[in-house]
Length: 216
Image (cartoon, rainbow, N blue to C red; front, side, top):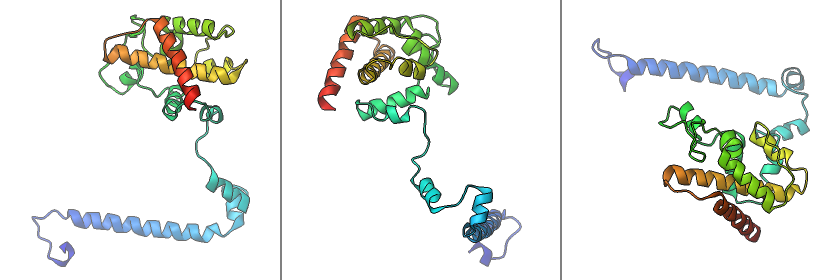
C-alpha cells in the first residue's frame, strides 16, 4: 500500500528501505541456492571442497547425532534418572549455576562457599572435590562402599574417569549419587538456610542408590 501512494516529504521512508533490504537479501539467497544446486551434482566439487563424495559419506552426515564428547557414550548410559544424567552433563561442562558462573553472568551472588563456610570461590571443582565438606563426603563414600583411595585431579571429568579402575558400573552410580546429593545439599543451604551433617547426607546417598536400583 505504501508503494502505491505518493511519498510525502514528512514521512520517513522506512518501509521503502526495509523492502529494498528484504528484496536484496532474497535475490542473494536465490543466487546462492541456484549455485549450490548446480554444484551439488558435481562429485569433483564436493571432493575438492568438502569431503570425498559418496552416498555412504552423505548418509553419515545425515545420521550424525551431533556434538560428541569423550564421555558421552558412558554418561548417557548411566543407570540413573534422565534428569540426573542431564545434570551430570552440565557438571562436566561446568555449566551449573555455581557462584563463579553466576558472577560471570553478572548475577547477584556471593563468593563464599556455603558448604564449607569459607571465602573460597564456589566453583564446580571446589564444590564437588576440594571443599572440606565434599572431602568428608568422599571419605564416607569410600569407607561405606570399600573403594580404593580416590584420586583428586583438577577437574571433574578426570575425577570420575580416573577412579573407574575397579567395578566401574558401581562406581558410576556411586559417583552420580554423591554429586547429586552434594548439589542438593548446597541448594538446601543456599535457598532454605538449613543443612544436613555429612553422616545424614551419606545415608541419603545410600538411599538414593537403592532407589535407583529398584526403578532402573
